[in-house]
Image (cartoon, rainbow, N blue to C red):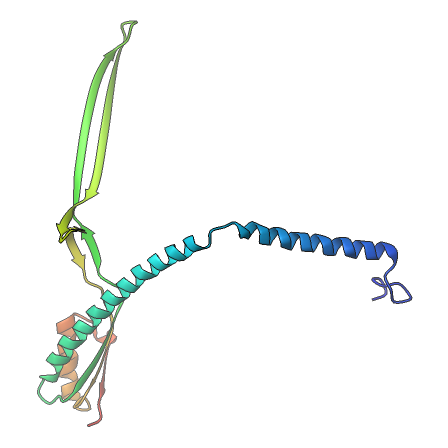
Length: 195
């Protein structure tokens, strides 16, 4: 404290001017930073963000619908196994489906031979390659033609079933899930359900 304040506990005149100058500089810097953001359009990033969130929401809904569909089919099949009562199924997928779209490829080659005033020849070759996604008109909406769809990988399967306390029934359920979904056994958990 002795090196900031004088012996009497107050700032001397040069120190006071320096601190006042520093405070003015800091306030000017804050003012310039606020002024720099003042004219920017804040609504554009929100619109872009809402579009992105809508796309993500659509992907999540599609994945969720696929999970529910697989769960319902598996639940129906497993509940028909002899010795099994009520069944609950939970499936987790890695991601949504991946699509490869049909494309229209157009390649063209144009050659021209030019002769200049001095008698020289110049040959020009121009290549043009264009690729476009093939679209179909479906009720007034342009929809891309899907060439191939890759279904998502199953991350894990949880089954809670009545009768699963019996190891023979548990083995039958495990085999049915492995074959039905093509999932390795280390991604499957089967638990017994209270009756």
